[in-house]
Image (tube, rainbow, N blue to C red; front, side):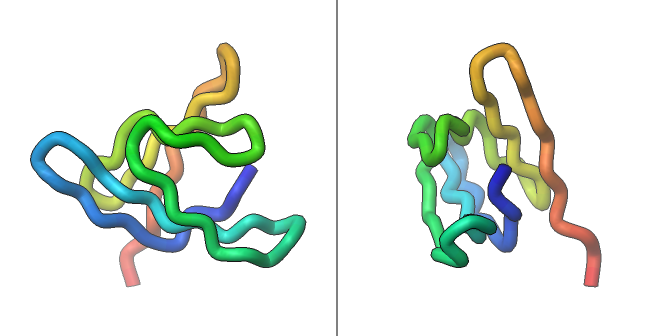
Length: 64
């Protein structure tokens, strides 16, 4: 599971910015794109929803 570090939310699409823990690479995903089997299905405010098969994870960026 990647670590979510940021987002850009638009009217219909979003971009999630994640840290791949295994490689320490920054990964940018648009809604509908996948990385390591996880698909970014929704970006809303400070939340990103990722799906891998039947598993769904909602990640939230904590308030500073």
